[in-house]
Image 1 (spheres, rainbow, N blue to C red):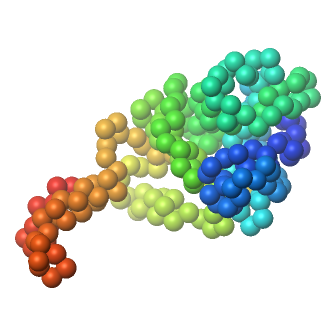
Image 2: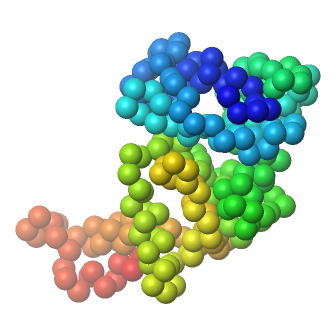
Image 3: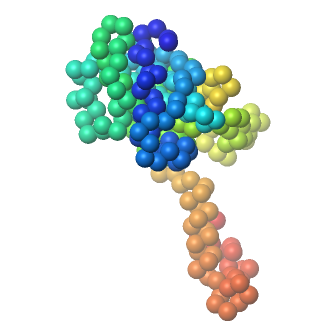
Length: 236
């Protein structure tokens, strides 16, 4: 185990069993514990509060956990009404600590940007904006956006590969990538520019589709919209 980090091994199996996002991948609904093996640990901050990036395998599925730890006497009050984030007690070699999902700790989420970008990006504030099966999303200072992946794919992620290649050839009609965090061939996070109030392409596409279907002509073959209506779709 990496120095100055608690022993995460007995904590990750029960923790994964309690997380909806892990259950949906493992199909382990109702299990009290899932088999889990720690594959890799990188300590990102050894002083308290501690921070580590932990890669865990459960069968053929691989997960990325960003874990924090604070003194056992301090952590429960800091976590407040987020007991779902707790993994359990441990010892970092100097004190008894509580290990938890670092995404519940705003101070550590700020430190995570520095680690994920190799020190090239820093922020004063962070806010968690979205949590999906595959990743957590964080906005920093309303200037940067990070996807921190929970589910690790066995190959490079197409969205990262395409984004980086487009940026390399000078395509600037997108929010530019700022940093790519990977270790051992595994994509852990992507950091890119953020524009407050911007709308995702998916939302625009759904708006266009909704408007197009609203113009469909009842009784026409397949209730199809007339061709000239396509250009009137609101999100185009």
